[in-house]
Amino acid sequence: MKLKIGITGGASAGHVVPALAVAAELQRAECELVYFGRADSIEADLAAKAGIRLATVPSAGLQRFRSWSNITMPVTVARGVFTAWRAMRRERPDVVFSKGSYVSVPVGVAAWLNRIPLAIHESDHTLGLANRILARFATTVFLAEDTPGLPRWLQRKAAVTGLPLRDDLADGRPESLRARLGIPAGLPVLLVFCGSSGSRRVNDAIRHQLGALTAHFSVVHICGRGNLDPALASAPGYWQLEYLHDDMVDALWLADLVIGRAGATTLAELGALSKPAVLVPLPASVSRGDQLDNAKAYAQHATCVVVADEEMAEGTPLHRACEQLLPALGGARHRPDPEAVRRTARDIATRTIALARPRGRHAR
Image 1 (cartoon, rainbow, N blue to C red):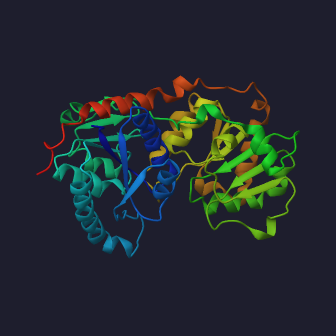
Image 2: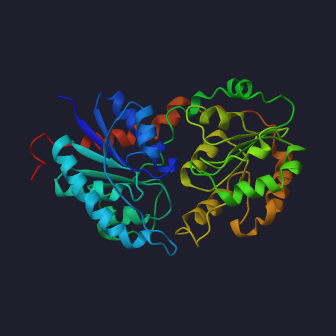
Image 3: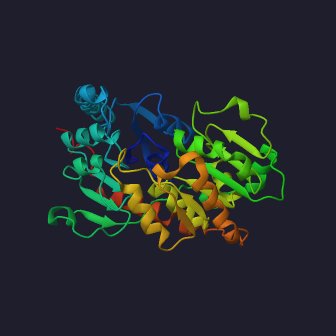
């Protein structure tokens, strides 16, 4: 009988894409998969594209600013735990793999309540809030890198694996995207993206400096759903898109320079492709500061310039950073080895499978 493995994690592509990289390796190992996530969400969308059935679970995250949603969040999470508990009883997975974010909390707790082994993965230098909660319930905690100072109870269940890269990262076809968008050869391509939701501050900064940027670059701007500017639909040298799914790898390959946030997944992909970058990490005022740590560490070994979010005033620092990196562009394209791209995801998948218990032993 096939092993059945639950996958969870969501809210952003930075959580879902690595989860699906592990899922692809689990599919190659002939496991049956079910994705636990929210309806009408990025995880639902991407899981469907990967051919993975969705079991819907409500969830809500803590806002790091004053919001009415923080008052109702505990009720939503409690409802999510109950819904996930029922889903676990119905689906009976042999093990659950979680990539983090608030989406994963009710699923991870429900797995523990049903005595289903739980493996979680942390991408950043420190555990995020969701993973700090789930680490107590987890059988194994996979870490992207060695993390000093872990408490002894966590050290006993931790394993350093690296960060799983998207399954198709080595398969980019940049000229296919160039032809589809009608981007002429000649100028280097500047790719701007800040996750699936985009960033209003970065979008505004780019558009304030659009004339200066298009003098040096063909600008491909992935601005997030609902963030297109109709007034710029015909701007020369500028291509704006809400989001890219299957074409995202092609866009990464096509880019000569990237402007983006400093999420761990983004940096891992840029590093694998040796892309020069201008990084705008999320500030501590709206995050736990993990992107600030990520950007600082990445800048020590990569070709990049870090621009503080609060210093982007009308985009001038972004424009200057792009000009500063112009001499670093035009080097030989780095084609990653497909086996190297998939190695971490395969290792995590193998370790996750090893946690599975025989059916019938995990239900209370």
